[in-house]
Amino acid sequence: MLKRLIWTTDFSETSQAALDWALALAELTKSEMVLLHIAEAEEAINLQLAEEHRRRLENIAEELSQKGLKVSTLIRPGKASQVIVQTAQETEADLVVMGAHGHTSFREKLLGSTTEQVLQVSSVPVLFVREKCEPKFRHFLVPSDLSDAALLALDYAVNLATFTNAKVTLLHVVAPYEGSPEAWEELKRETKEELKRWSNKVVEPSDVPAIETKVIRYHHPGAGITEFARENHVDLIIIPTHGHSALGRLIFGSVAAHVIYYAPCPVISGKANVFSKG
Image (cartoon, rainbow, N blue to C red):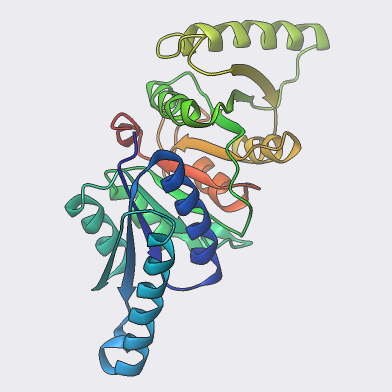
């Protein structure tokens, strides 16, 4: 599933937090690691800074090599999103691991960001780590709108879960529901049955230790997903950026963006087709 992953760094706290997850995944899957630093314009004229960054990258590579990993380093100038995507293609990487900077008003500050641009054009999934936390692989969450896009994300999550015996939860978020309590319980039952039929297209019951289905109602799908993840101690969320329903009808800056920037755990995301390569 994972043979080579790229960790991108600007030596910020969030990129260092992402390194912990890149390392954990590399050790788990025996993957090769590519350490990528995008040289900023200042480094072209500040040779001392450029040399400092080169040494820092080489030192990290040496530390990882001592753990028995196959590691290489790259320093490339250019626009961050373009360099990341091009490097992933050239190195035939299976995953990009990077930090995500959270904002209170993500709608205002996310447009045009490296995060959005990478997700729009990346040919592989991207793992975003927003803050430092211990890498754990016990509970994966896959938000589902019963679309083909979500089905590919589920398949990806199940493949990853086989390395860790993780539990996988399928979550369907219903917009505010005004029916009677009895009608809501019936809707939940029917939706959970549909989720099971849907998931059986790619998942055999024996594939992972446990796959459970959950149906909740919440005023906003993204907020419902992040709140569920927080309350249920989810370690990793896998969500595509495009689907076809109220949950999956995404131009970036909606549900997937909300999840990436407000989830209490790292998030793997990308266009639906990138998950089919996992």
